[in-house]
Length: 66
Image (cartoon, rainbow, N blue to C red; front, side):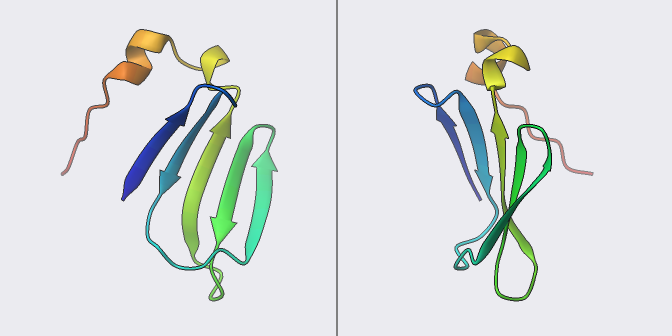
């Protein structure tokens, strides 16, 4: 998994695997899912991230497994 913060485009992107993206869908304003050829979600992008989280929140990411 890769996580990328793009400050220039004000976006946060989670890439779940390296499958080729064949389709993208905005499922709600500012939330885009990327799909592979099997309709499996392989990426999630959040736009206008600065309105959703502070810069300090974006500088530290906590992972929780359960």
